Length: 331
Image (cartoon, rainbow, N blue to C red; front, side):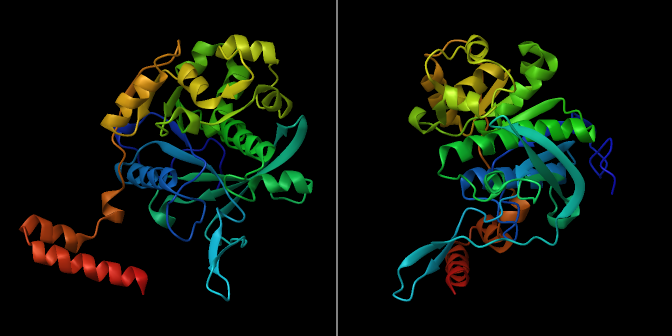
């Protein structure tokens, strides 16, 4: 398959013709593809499935985690332990695309894998990996563990997702009209776009943002000088970053900058939208935050028999079906 001048490999429905690149650190598409940890990934995975069903002109951008999040195992004494097992994915296609990004002022090779829409009935997805022999070991570890605890590694992961994903869109010629950040992990894409267009308004009209975290302390912040040293800002000086973002202390708040760079953002429920607007209202220059209720793909996740009982008003049937499903889950 050729990835030059890439288009989604299905007929696009007219209401969804706008080209969109959707960035997320994790996607729960299907259990065999272990690049997820929790709710953020399940939202993103269902989004990809719904985009396929609606025939949206959308591609997903993620990272191919060598060891996933982690595997939980039991020791001989039955206590729980964490294991890091390498994952194998025969269903992913090696695109043959290789390119470099800068991390810590050092070139890092990126290899690109492709998830065909027909594999799991999802939108087409591109997954990035630095686990290639051309890279030194430290660079290879960028894509080893989802949400690595090492701060420098985590910032490098953010650079890979954002800068790497945006650069890939240029390489394959997809030319997104919108860059959708599912949380602020991919925010470095905005700095890549700024280095390309040299105008924050050209970035803003292309950027939308979904915020999930209703507690300000839970939003990612990193030392601005560390981010600069890690090449997060695509060549901008710290002073230029401060002027552009309005961040004048040393804690670079990824979510706040995403809200200032995007032209619109959304919370993930009606109440969360209210909480988010209140939480961020003390900061000037943020975009409007609307509410879009978080959901999962009905066709994939809903148990059809359970819903038939509900529609029939059969409470006993619902109870029996739930017991059966729980028994299956724990066998």
